[in-house]
Length: 171
Image (cartoon, helix red, strand yellow):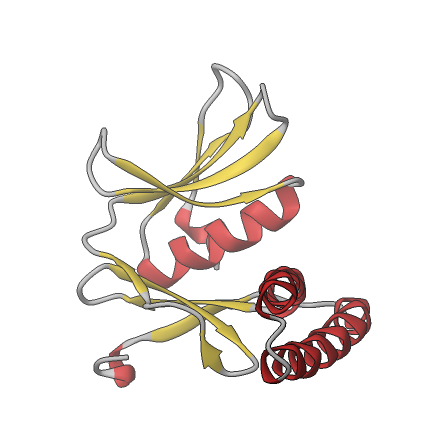
């Protein structure tokens, strides 16, 4: 991360302990499957080894999906938001940065019954950043970003009744 002193951590995903309990057998079976794959390659059973590589990939995706961490950093001066995804401290991908954020909104998608957190870069250009099943978690992320950037928060959970949340309530 460039210039870490200008970015402020405003949100970090909380993983309950039972997520780690679920991931323990997945990581164990993944390690065992990797050992078996190496053994199959050693004995020349290439097609069976390919099947095991597919199983390793599936186990890794499931285990990582349960244990990865999302961190959100803000830069108040430049109105930037940086998203960082890690797995046990190891970056999973390149950080995603949104510059010149105008405001943040929480939108209820009535067809899917979920809540989307959007970042507006202009009045019409928005980027969806996260989807939640309950409004509490969606507002937690949106509020932390809006407070970190000192921008407005739009509550768009009721159809046709959009409400601007006052900045004083964000803190």
